[in-house]
Amino acid sequence: MTLSRPFLSTLCTLTALAGLLLAGCSDQAAAPADTAAAPAPQAASTPAKGGPGAQPPVSVTTVRALQRDMAVNLKTTGTVVSLSSVDVKSQITSTLRQVHFREGQFVKAGQLLFTLDARTEEANLAKTRAQLAKDTVSLNDARRQWQRAKQLLAQKFVSQGALDTALAEVDAWQATLASDQAAITASQVALSYARITAPQAGRAGAVNVFAGSAVLANQTPLVTITQLDPIGVAFSIAQRDLSSALAALKDGGAVVTAVLADKGGSFQGRLQFMDNLVDASSGTVMAKANFANPGSKLWPGAFVEVSQTVATLSDVVVVPQVSVIQGPRGTFVYVIADGVASMRPVKLLYAEGADAAIEGVKPGEEVALDGRQNLRPNASVVVRAPQGAASGGKKAGQP
Image 1: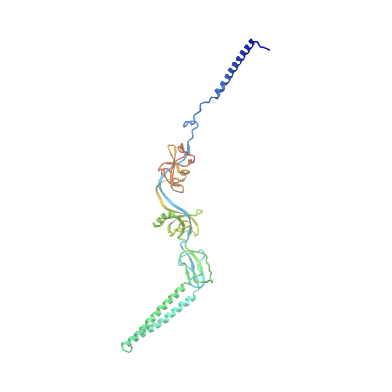
Image 2: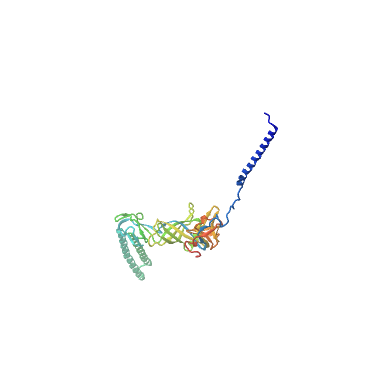
């Protein structure tokens, strides 16, 4: 079928109008979508100070750094030792007759402890005394012969030689009497060994013999007497502190404190002895301090905590030890000033108990205590408690 020219012209016109109409509708639909996709202005990333979303201040307590002297103490474990312990033995071989004390009794120096069978020593003493009496008679006779010889010499009946012989006889008997007197003294000493007395004051241990027991001279142990007052404490001092301990020893001995476990009490004594060599295996020097022990609370063999003051740090800045923070970059504290926390590097000089001596903080500056773990450099803070002092419960500003 053949289309006429007027019809084709009309069809083209309608097609063009339809295309224009579709294009207009498409533009009107796209316009709202583009408007919605347009980005809105961004809000400020950091809120203004004090405005909505600002970081609240950190609540802390503070303490004032103080300047004062601080004692340097050495702490170690020691052992209570007796200053003197004597094993009592007999000096003669005999049989024990009697024990004059009880086991565990405190005895005085010179107190009678044991009595031995002394009949042999008594007989020997009597024999030597009889010999002395016999020789005394002979000496008297020799003196009379000498006097007679002098008279005869004056009458020229004897020679000078006879007189000299009579005098020599007198001298010989005098020497014999001196020997007899020495024998008597020896017998008296042997007889005294039958009475065994305490060589020192102290506590008696277990009695190892009984009445009727055979006792060998210088072999059989009878009892041990241990001195308890005064008493000693042995402990070790590190080699690095040797010079300070020696200096304290020259001044009459540094004060040493010994504390028994389980609240057994605290005692003060003085350093009295230091060994003359360093133990190569431990790098320490053995030391000993003397303590008065009237109540016998310090018992040989007991363990005690020993503390000794070896030096004093003068005019150092002291803060609580818990305020000092050990970080990966070193040791520091937070100093609080005008409501802001500043991280301050410090050098730890010495720490003991609740206190620490440091360098890097001035006396009187406020150091963060509780709440310091929440702080950051330049953080705002609010102090929520009254200020304390650096030395265990002292008020701020007190030395």
